[in-house]
Length: 175
Image (cartoon, rainbow, N blue to C red; front, side, top):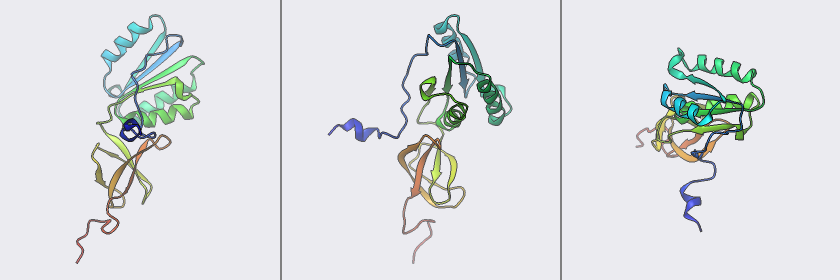
C-alpha cells in the first residue's frame, strides 16, 4: 500500500505550483495580501496578455471584493483564467463564486498555505466557521468540541468538524 494515499487523503485540496496559461487572453489575479510582487511576476510571465489584479487590502472588506469579482466574472469572455492566492478561508469562497459564475475548475488556479486560516463545517449545527490548522476547536455556534477531520468539501470550502468526544460533547465534567 502506498503511503502517499494515507498521507494526503483524496478530498484534501492540493495546491500545485502550476504555471499560468500562456494561451489565455485575460488573467484575473485575486490576492489576500497586497500581491504586488505576485502581480509583477505574473505580468512578466504573461507578456502582452491582459492582467487585472484585485487585492483585498484595496477594498473595505471581503464582501466588497466579492462584489467587484462577481462583476468582473459577469462581464468575462472565453479565455479568462482566474488566479486566487491567499489562505484557504479566503480562496475557497472565491472559488465557489467563480464556479457559480460559470468558470470551470481548470480555468481557476489556486495557491494557498494550508497552515493559515481555514473554514470548518460543524456537522452538529451546520455552521461554517474560521479556524486555525489545529486539530480541535469549540464550535462558535453550538459549543461542541470538534475534531477537525482530514476531509474537505469543495462545495462548502471547509473541512469536516465532528464531535471530538461523544461522551462529553460540551466538555462538561462528568460525575
